[in-house]
Image 1 (cartoon, one colour):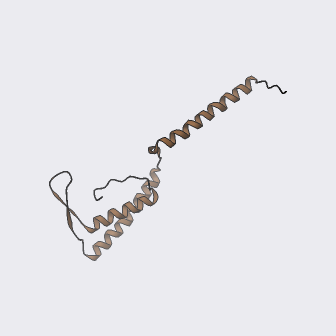
Image 2 (cartoon, helix red, strand yellow):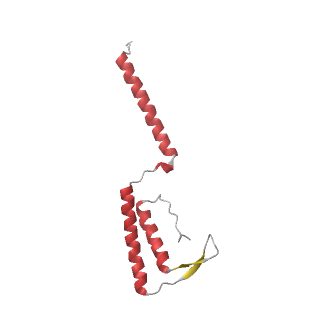
Length: 115
Protein backbone atom coordinates (compact mmCIF):
# COMPACT_ATOMS: atom_id res chain seq x y z
CA UNK A 1 0.00 0.00 0.00
CA UNK A 2 1.30 3.46 -0.91
CA UNK A 3 1.80 6.08 1.75
CA UNK A 4 0.96 9.69 1.08
CA UNK A 5 2.72 12.31 3.10
CA UNK A 6 1.56 15.92 2.95
CA UNK A 7 4.38 18.46 3.15
CA UNK A 8 3.97 22.10 4.13
CA UNK A 9 4.00 23.13 0.46
CA UNK A 10 1.46 20.45 -0.43
CA UNK A 11 -0.82 21.55 2.42
CA UNK A 12 -0.59 25.13 1.18
CA UNK A 13 -1.56 24.08 -2.37
CA UNK A 14 -4.53 22.04 -1.07
CA UNK A 15 -5.78 24.95 1.06
CA UNK A 16 -5.45 27.47 -1.79
CA UNK A 17 -7.22 25.09 -4.18
CA UNK A 18 -10.04 24.56 -1.66
CA UNK A 19 -10.51 28.30 -1.09
CA UNK A 20 -10.47 28.94 -4.85
CA UNK A 21 -13.09 26.24 -5.39
CA UNK A 22 -15.33 27.68 -2.65
CA UNK A 23 -15.03 31.20 -4.10
CA UNK A 24 -15.82 29.91 -7.59
CA UNK A 25 -18.81 27.93 -6.29
CA UNK A 26 -20.36 30.88 -4.46
CA UNK A 27 -19.69 33.32 -7.29
CA UNK A 28 -21.66 31.06 -9.65
CA UNK A 29 -24.60 30.76 -7.27
CA UNK A 30 -24.74 34.50 -6.58
CA UNK A 31 -24.90 35.39 -10.27
CA UNK A 32 -27.75 32.93 -10.81
CA UNK A 33 -29.77 34.31 -7.91
CA UNK A 34 -29.46 38.01 -8.73
CA UNK A 35 -30.78 38.78 -12.21
CA UNK A 36 -30.32 42.51 -11.53
CA UNK A 37 -26.54 42.07 -11.55
CA UNK A 38 -26.37 42.46 -15.34
CA UNK A 39 -23.54 44.75 -16.35
CA UNK A 40 -24.13 47.03 -19.31
CA UNK A 41 -21.49 48.84 -21.29
CA UNK A 42 -22.39 52.52 -21.24
CA UNK A 43 -20.74 52.98 -24.63
CA UNK A 44 -22.81 50.23 -26.29
CA UNK A 45 -26.00 51.42 -24.55
CA UNK A 46 -25.36 54.97 -25.76
CA UNK A 47 -24.65 53.69 -29.27
CA UNK A 48 -27.90 51.69 -29.32
CA UNK A 49 -29.80 54.72 -27.97
CA UNK A 50 -28.41 56.98 -30.69
CA UNK A 51 -29.35 54.39 -33.33
CA UNK A 52 -32.87 54.18 -31.86
CA UNK A 53 -33.15 57.98 -31.95
CA UNK A 54 -32.04 58.04 -35.61
CA UNK A 55 -34.60 55.40 -36.62
CA UNK A 56 -37.26 57.24 -34.64
CA UNK A 57 -36.39 60.55 -36.31
CA UNK A 58 -36.78 59.00 -39.76
CA UNK A 59 -40.21 57.68 -38.77
CA UNK A 60 -41.26 61.12 -37.51
CA UNK A 61 -40.07 62.70 -40.79
CA UNK A 62 -42.20 60.22 -42.77
CA UNK A 63 -45.30 61.10 -40.73
CA UNK A 64 -44.57 64.82 -41.13
CA UNK A 65 -44.16 64.42 -44.90
CA UNK A 66 -47.60 62.76 -45.13
CA UNK A 67 -49.07 65.84 -43.41
CA UNK A 68 -51.45 63.65 -41.41
CA UNK A 69 -50.63 63.73 -37.72
CA UNK A 70 -53.80 61.86 -36.61
CA UNK A 71 -54.08 63.83 -33.40
CA UNK A 72 -55.94 62.26 -30.51
CA UNK A 73 -56.17 62.93 -26.83
CA UNK A 74 -55.46 60.85 -23.78
CA UNK A 75 -56.21 61.60 -20.15
CA UNK A 76 -53.36 62.68 -17.93
CA UNK A 77 -52.64 60.03 -15.29
CA UNK A 78 -51.63 62.55 -12.63
CA UNK A 79 -53.91 65.52 -13.08
CA UNK A 80 -57.15 66.37 -14.77
CA UNK A 81 -55.71 67.84 -17.97
CA UNK A 82 -55.92 66.13 -21.35
CA UNK A 83 -52.75 65.38 -23.33
CA UNK A 84 -52.40 65.40 -27.10
CA UNK A 85 -50.84 62.38 -28.81
CA UNK A 86 -50.02 62.18 -32.51
CA UNK A 87 -49.32 59.30 -34.83
CA UNK A 88 -45.69 60.45 -34.86
CA UNK A 89 -45.52 60.10 -31.05
CA UNK A 90 -46.77 56.52 -31.13
CA UNK A 91 -44.59 55.55 -34.10
CA UNK A 92 -41.51 57.16 -32.55
CA UNK A 93 -42.15 55.32 -29.30
CA UNK A 94 -42.51 52.00 -31.11
CA UNK A 95 -39.31 52.53 -33.10
CA UNK A 96 -37.29 53.31 -29.97
CA UNK A 97 -38.64 50.27 -28.12
CA UNK A 98 -37.99 47.98 -31.08
CA UNK A 99 -34.43 49.22 -31.66
CA UNK A 100 -33.42 48.97 -28.00
CA UNK A 101 -35.05 45.54 -27.65
CA UNK A 102 -32.88 44.24 -30.52
CA UNK A 103 -29.73 44.88 -28.50
CA UNK A 104 -31.07 44.68 -24.94
CA UNK A 105 -34.13 42.39 -24.76
CA UNK A 106 -33.95 42.32 -20.95
CA UNK A 107 -34.01 46.13 -20.67
CA UNK A 108 -37.12 47.49 -18.94
CA UNK A 109 -38.29 50.77 -20.43
CA UNK A 110 -40.84 53.07 -18.82
CA UNK A 111 -42.39 55.53 -21.21
CA UNK A 112 -45.05 58.20 -21.35
CA UNK A 113 -46.46 56.77 -24.58
CA UNK A 114 -46.70 53.18 -23.36
CA UNK A 115 -50.27 51.94 -23.51
